[in-house]
Length: 461
Image (cartoon, rainbow, N blue to C red; front, side, top):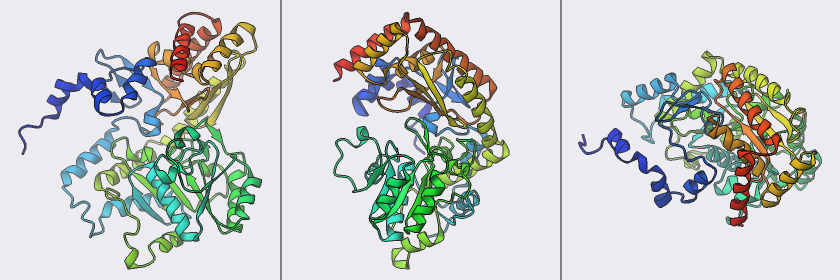
């Protein structure tokens, strides 16, 4: 055993250099951005829905690592599963055997979508999407994927080709020749299908950017159109799946919807070991892996590793044993209802929307003259600054971590751990009311910070 490596000593010795190390060796813009918006905190530990700093102050996590921490941070069941799998010293990733854990996790995942049969394991949400895109093309023999404007399906080249946001695509062309349609536009979908070269439609049942739901009946009607034209439906449930929206999968909110391919990741990891999964129909997998010669025609070096599979199995057990999905539905409804009650009180609060514990809070142009002039100045500097003005005091004053739902959007997205309850709902709503009251008072530190953001936005042009 090495006598030179001591993780605890290394962190104690050099953990204080975290921001400088990132500035020198990782993404130099990250520490700059965090300092600009006042997010350059130092968190010492985390548990459940909370972070803690060196002084023991708690910070409520309403972001969940962009949805990764579905069962909270350091859940004891997931921790134990990982300790157990490490202690078992399994013969993992031999590449020439059939390990039990991948089969067991695949069996469990398929049970939540009985019309699906098989699972391919990868390492992330974007890899799960890449797999679905490749499988759809292979199974149908067609080249083109239809996606929705403002969609987010990942940032590798294939998934970026079906990413509906120009800010992510800029600088990485040429991408694959796929086609965007407006979310919920059946006529546009049918026009593309009539061209005869569409392999699939990929869609988030609730878009992460802006928190926009597919219109009622859209998924079912789209599925019927796709089947008529021999194309596939891919449901991207990387963020919405595993209970986030109050159903196990968000597509299950609409009766009769049965995606041909289903992408999951994020919460399946338990917050520890990256894992992605593409669940699909038997005939699709048999088209891809059509002979022994093609047994590794699609693979992932670390896919199906024992630690990821153990984490996934533990997460599914927690979801069931602790009734986490029902809690997300119940708690999400309470949070959404209490926030929606504030819309009539604050004129810059336009709408509260979403489902389960995936909630969007949208701000809009006020009607009163004084507030309208301040709003206009912010918008002229950079759209989205007001939402950022709200996010910062939530952290600085109330120790609540959240974030805007996309670049240049006046929307805050709440995607907390699915284990939160009434105490966390009350803490967030009361803090949000406090920030809204100050913003609508028209002065004070909040608008001073707004002027700082405006200067920064103008300087970065």
